[in-house]
Length: 340
Ligand code: ADP
Ligand code: NA
Image (cartoon, rainbow, N blue to C red; front, side, top):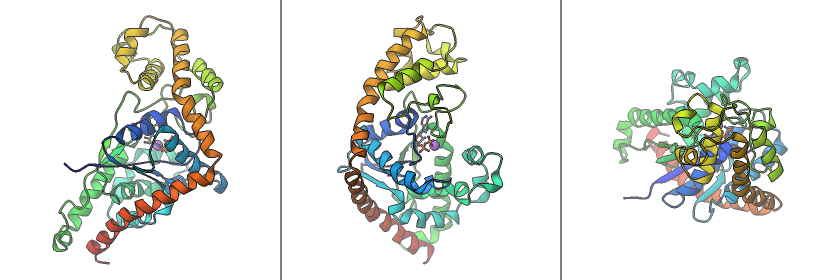
């Protein structure tokens, strides 16, 4: 069977955190062994909300540095930033004309991000899921590793792919393309930490935009910052349960055990076999050591790479060239199919 193609992206919006790492980047690294991978710094997505231009430039390099520092190999796979491959925006326009308003109206992330002042949200924020569909489909990617928060957008991308194939089925056949011109991209939502929660509030996901620094562990945090944040993490007064069932009504406890399991490459059940019955203070010390052990080298390497922006930029330029070669082939076919 042919090697499958993976596409995924991370927004350059600053504050890269443990949720981005465990929910996305750590899985990107693993998939390199089995798939052809395309990893994108999705800067066009970032500007759906206001970005200071100088910070955006810095953050594009920082996400790239996080990819490289985590172990993504830009020679074997493709690493680039979205704005440098015009085909993303070009295909997104065609898909804007395929997707239906009613479909986008159901997207919960828009409702969360737009908040109460929806009239004042950018049109881009609303159409974001169509651009995300274009990102994936322009490479005809088959697998998309993401956190749980992206599940609904992936389902939309599948619907858009199918509707394009149906709307243009005659033209696709007449021009000799495969009837399933766009494959149905499969989400890969795997591991014990597909939704890492805030360290301050077990009902909110860990997020770049949370105003509390103590809500998240950033990839560039040093050992002291990690230790303080883990020690201050909200918990309940009960000891750790010995079985996973005991985590059900305890979101903060569940989150810390999930983080430990993901960082250690173990299951939650296995972690509870070791720590069940013990106090959180003891567990937290072990979690600090593990976090510093796993994240410390990544943060240090990110900082080293950020001292060498020319190198980081060169990686992106080379990646964009290779991405464009694939994307332009798809766009040529799409234009032919649509009748341009
Ligand atoms: P954010 O949601 O923090 O703004 P992005 O939208 O750039 O970050 O998401 C990058 C990747 O990180 C996506 O695959 C997303 O699903 C994943 N991700 C973001 N937050 C979390 C979280 N709290 N837990 C697990 N995965 C997450
Ligand atoms: Na997200």
